[in-house]
Length: 179
Image 1: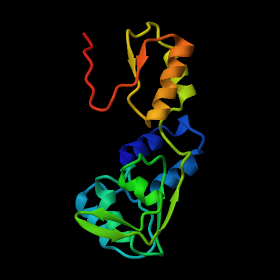
Image 2: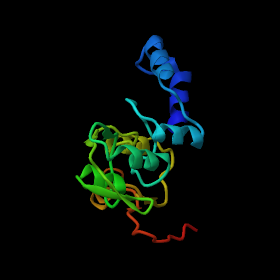
Image 3: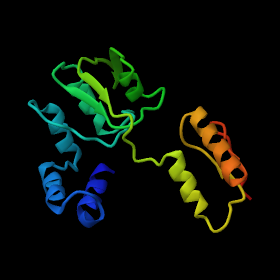
Image 4: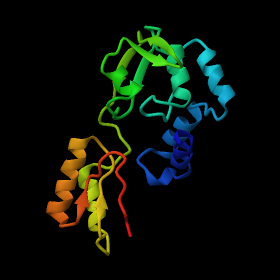
């Protein structure tokens, strides 16, 4: 996903704020790793590097191998770019866990941990409501299925109050008959 997003960013240089030169420099400074073997080589390597991964909650994917390799070293930094949902490995690390379990092993977290909490690709409530106001036909029912329970319910209340739509926040694993 991160690779595809980078390619889209590069392909549409005229659609964002970076100059063509800045975009070109950004895209060519990075080494894009597609294959699992290349990713494993990163984890085996030493020396300064920045690894950008799309696994936002650190629950799976290649980032888990990188964490296992680099989290124990105090010279490294683990930087989360975005929200970490409660109960995930990412949330545990952000909230100061001294160890996390990876592949059946307790891995010490000695690396510096930082988080860019305000950086997210998700729309905020105002953006979601603006998008919904553009609908030509009101949906029969609307379900808010993303976000922490309090935030999901707050969005539900705004949709109900501002748009007057039939809206609900389903319970985890709840099924709904749409017919």
